[in-house]
Image (tube, rainbow, N blue to C red; front, side, top):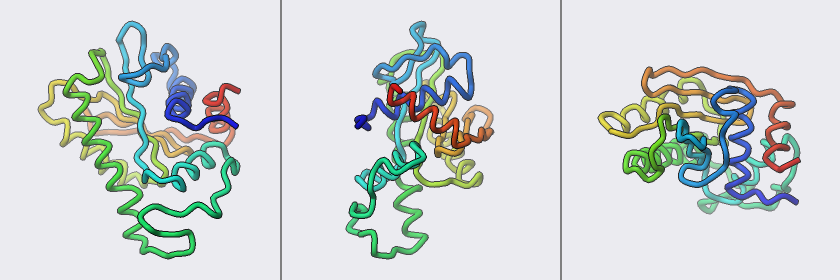
Length: 198
């Protein structure tokens, strides 16, 4: 069975960018600091996940990416003490699964890019996997938060990609706009297989 480590998600991101956006993403290679980069330093992209850091959510995300049940989730408990059979309010669920992880990721990654942690690239991107299905209003809110956090910084992200498996949101903090690229099941399977080296 393939190992679903951080490189799996980086390879999936790279495959989706190459296929959906073409140039200049066809020249990306998987490295570190940032995770995806062009040899000429024209483009660097950090890849991360805005999900609850627990086994259930990570496995559920891989199942969604694969389009099939790679993992059996029936006996995997939720984080924060909730089991599969316990109910939590929709509001509480949304808070723990979407808002807080996304906010923390943006704060952390924006601080790092501004500090020079990822080095010098002509263009910087941030690719975020989200397990939750964000509405367009929530994507717009995420973009506004990124714009606020980056205001006045010397180094910042030029593009923020939000992937939720069936769609890729390509967000521009400079213009405050985003576009949606739909991903059908066949494309998603292609990205998954490429990430696994199939």
